[in-house]
Length: 182
Figure 1: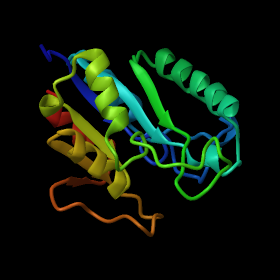
Figure 2: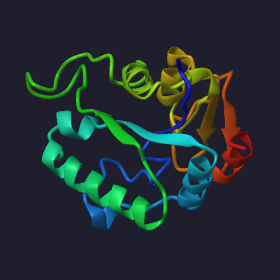
Figure 3: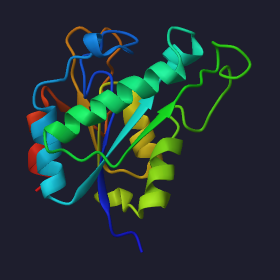
Figure 4: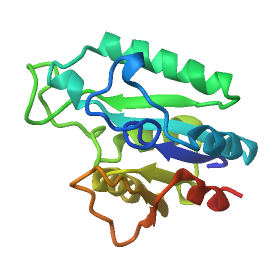
């Protein structure tokens, strides 16, 4: 029985400022309200998952080891803020860039729903009762493709390619998601 509900978060642009291919702690800047949002989600029995495309790995900008190191640090910062992130899912693959290990199509690369569906299966998540916050149309499409009904597009005035999805809720800050968690 699918009893759990979840909050799915994109990383770059939602959890942290999107500064293009962030892989070092000194470049990682948490978004305002991310910890408050996660504390309230946890308090309302939402499991929190990070789902992130990491094309910088395929492009050779940084290694999977660099990604793991930053992720471990990020999760430590969440813990210090009394936020529990259940799991981080990532896709290092890209269909157009990388060597033979990373240059390929993957069901885990958003807009495909693979990361979300894997979390749902492993953690018995009811996707119809879950939420997703992203800053790109591919994030939203992954949400809709997996069966999530409440998908939020976090606007970023510095992004040129942000296209609202007709079924998504557009928000200007993370606090706007909080009423949907209670």
